[in-house]
Image (cartoon, rainbow, N blue to C red):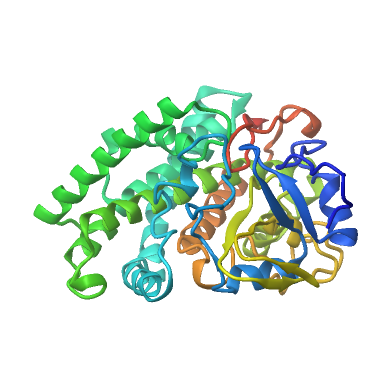
Length: 405
């Protein structure tokens, strides 16, 4: 913990560059693994930066997602708390048996088999997007041309959302992930519109089921209270859409930037496409611009890293700092495309680990394979140092990734 009288630093920390980690991560892992911080709301919390601590806390049921509890730190500058408030993350505020039942139910429908069946459609869409980018000429913005359209298409395909409605989701997603970018009135209006859309979509799926995840969930008669309620279906759809769209969309741009920032990485993948799968895992581990991290609220007193944390404490788990912990990863500050094993915690750990991680991995592996095959001469059109981060959101990303080929 910090010395008395020393003001807690503002969090998230500033990155020296879009692809470089904040210096504070290494400093805190070494000297202050449970560190006081001040959030965008002005509230105080504690930041965990070591791998073992982060993994243990994310797996410990005493660290809850009850971020609307009295005394819990507000993560954002907005009253609603964005994705961490108003039940916005799809089952995030459920606990115990209810949460386990919800996870089991969604897990039964959101299977690896379903994701595997989507792969050919994801590949075809990635190829179309790359072809369109090439046709429009270079330099192109990879984020706008491929990064954002592909994941929103995939998650909407999963949920049975019509093509004509897909462009609306990026804005709704941004407002849910706002720390400082949007005002409260704008966030509330966007969320009301989002909720109304999803309620109508759920009703449509109940009346006329299709071959999609939401239709399958709506038709299930076992599980929570005998059936998923409309509200819980909306929460589930909302959580999958925000998590499945925004995080993967940003990760595509960051992945390609990391691999092109050092040309030898791209050349290694061209020489051996079998590296694509472990390279994606290493990119996920190495990401220096991941966004906020995962908040937890402590329901009872717990000891973490030798510190006694009282009930009512809010902690923020920095999975990205944990992923660079030398205690867990040899050469943690080096990107090794063949790293194995690679037990990173990018998708969390324990009962709240990301349900959509199989889909995210499939999208990242697929789009990387398409780019390597179609555009082997791909390169950044600006120096990596000139790439700019997206600011004011809970999810890290790059504003643009200019490329040529």
